[in-house]
Length: 560
Image (cartoon, rainbow, N blue to C red; front, side):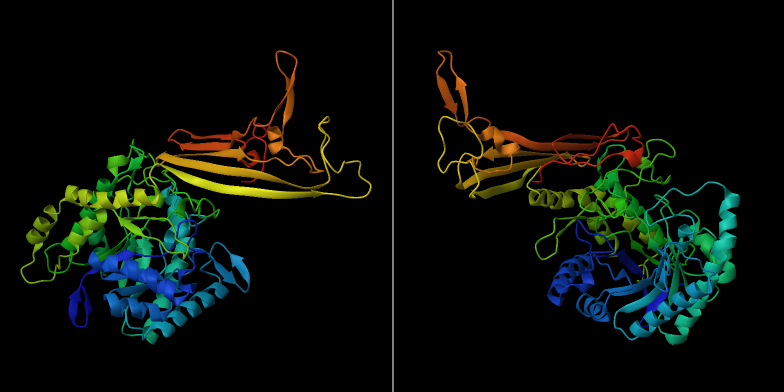
């Protein structure tokens, strides 16, 4: 079993790709709604990197304008697999948001079929379309309550019951969709995206008109018997729509580029070994590495929070990734570190630079291999992958890591530099305030007319480790106004004060408390606890997190 393009056997060297700047998520980034010059600049930077590492297909979701699929293909020779999520993350039905899709509901079925056939009608003649993909591990969506990855529920009976009650109608509808799509476009194959091989027996019953079995699979070094299971159960080509490893070691609590490269090279070796004609199962047509750049938004996706912070907490367990599994069942997968490229800060145009990790360079070597060339057999493939040097890839990536560090100005950097000038005017006909200050009295306001205040802020922040960050802001007082009617709180300490010296003489001090720490905070995330320290920084209560006695009340201070 193999895929052909223009009559030639074609191995998919694919990549899961998107464009999501730090601080945004896949809902609000809206890359393809930017101006053409911004889109072109973003595509040119990233497609050149993908072309350089011999990627020939990217996975994109619906919403990408056809002209950009054409642009990517014609300029960089990179095809697009166009993906409709098919209700995976909920649907808006008749103006009402429905978070969990019911594939038995007639209105839902009508809407999903309408959307996916419209997609095919709109894109079928677009240069650069390679194939269509239905869904994204929608079988997991039958259990999970949101978009974030979770551990799978226990209890085989419960799983089987969900498969029959909710899964079978879904797969039946996917097959209806495939038939409708192929009736419109006979030139592009249709695949489904399933989570691993869960419910594969139901798929065998209900999805007989699907061309390709796509799977999101996170099994560690090896996919095991998946190639054979898919062949025996479905007799379909297998395409890995997602697979890979994060680049964060949960045991070391640090970035681990070699670990990520290790797993990805092992995975791609099996994908090539099982291509047609090499002596193994022969039903592998390629895959899509997950993913090109880090998704900073993923850990807080359901709550739409923390998109500007790269989280280091492991949120789910994958037992096949033994290198950083502290003990059986320990969480070892870090959702926001799956990129084979690290993501740089966003510039004023909304663009950013990527910094390749070791996996990028290792896969660049892997994708030079064409398993369908004359003289390539199983032994050749195995020797080829044996000669991919991971340490060389790590060394090549060190320069990129250093460059990324330089864009952040190193471990310690200036976070705030601001001057605040305020003018006050006090006046009126019924005031007792004098026109000029009385030197014998300390009263406020001290005079009518104009006065001004000068306040300067300097902030320093640091990240000594990926799981720790700290910031401190200093305030430097210049002139402190004497004439405001309203009380001045923070800057009041900088006003002149009169004290008596040892001889009883009065001395006016004008430079007291001119430099102070304005506020400070740190956050340290560990495997056993998340520790936060703060001084005069705003925070909300923890009542919803179990603080029933109000030990951590809400407090907000002057904004900076």
